[in-house]
Image (cartoon, rainbow, N blue to C red; front, side):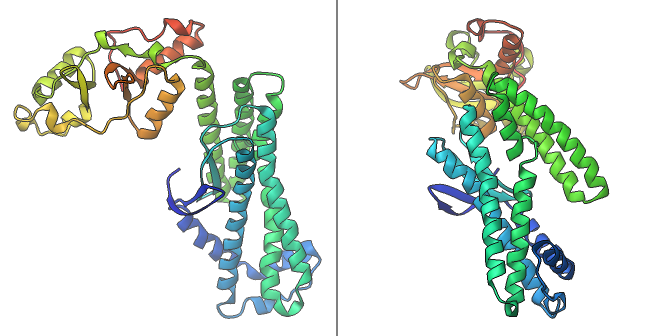
Length: 389
């Protein structure tokens, strides 16, 4: 999840996604509109006697709305730091924490597969939220009635932080409760199988939450949609990772001797003709045996038809290449393709020589074979089928 960096703590970058800039003022407005009703709820739940009327005067509702919204998202940020700090203690790397439309997300470089680690990391976030709620309640009860404006904010945060903790503990994988469920399921079975089971529960939870949202709040429908997508995505990622365990890029790649390449002098017309007859849409560009670029159908298609005889591959090829070594894990190659938005990676040895190429299509074929029970060491043989990526 992309966003712009606003700072860091414990060595973890903190980012804001553009959607956060929309949802923060919306939350502030919704709170401001319901100041009187919220004050009554706080009185009932915390046994207080705040007078709602003074809180609705002038611009005060908007100030209280903004302060409460900022406090709420501050709590969300600390919730994510709860997960992250515990993960750092176990030796896991955190890429960043991002605030966005639906709250916050801590991006792990690699998710823990030790069920004990995942259990403690997942519980840490709700524990922080509960502590924030208790701390806000203590401040709320310590302040005099003469500062009901401040008491309103801390009363609101006392309730919302506990609600946040309780909601996150529901079994909607990949929410905290879903991760706790996966950790418990993974005690006695493979991590990938536990993920599939937790994801199935998460999808069912998302479906129920979406139905509830039809009658209560549209925001629940949006949340349900993202829970369903996230559960499906992580389940798929975990399944692929399990299938590619102990499989290297060398097992999957098309080797150099069977690799189809083009030269930089090839015209775009010639390149497109080759793509049609050879049924490939991406080629390494080689000069004297050395890799100098990659050219794809998108590159060639960007040239106007009347100019394709005049333009050569060197005019349109990409020279900023993402490469990988043959001994790298297959899953590393898959993740690198996803992160960089590319469909294939040139494979180079330590000397920088091109020794092969691995594509997303290669990996999907290999995945199908492994899922069908085929031995990993039989994968990666050259094929005349089209590279669809």
